[in-house]
Image (cartoon, rainbow, N blue to C red; front, side, top):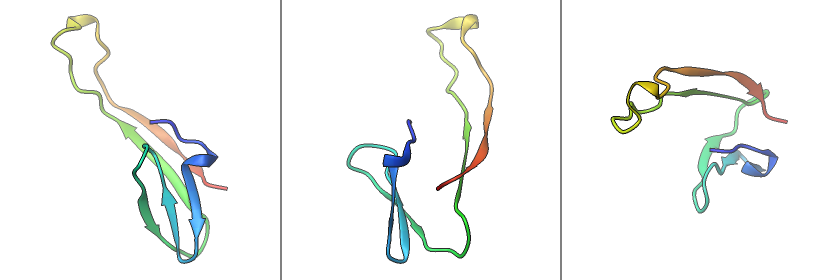
Length: 65
């Protein structure tokens, strides 16, 4: 998933996050700044064997402009 300033838009009383084509997630309006944070948990691959990365990656919180 790629996030950029084009991936979200502000509308009256809500913010729309569009992380994928033809899909939007509605975020109700709140007072104050909005932040985005993510955790990536890859599925263990049987094809890649022991060389595949296996773990969890926590991405820090970033303020939306």
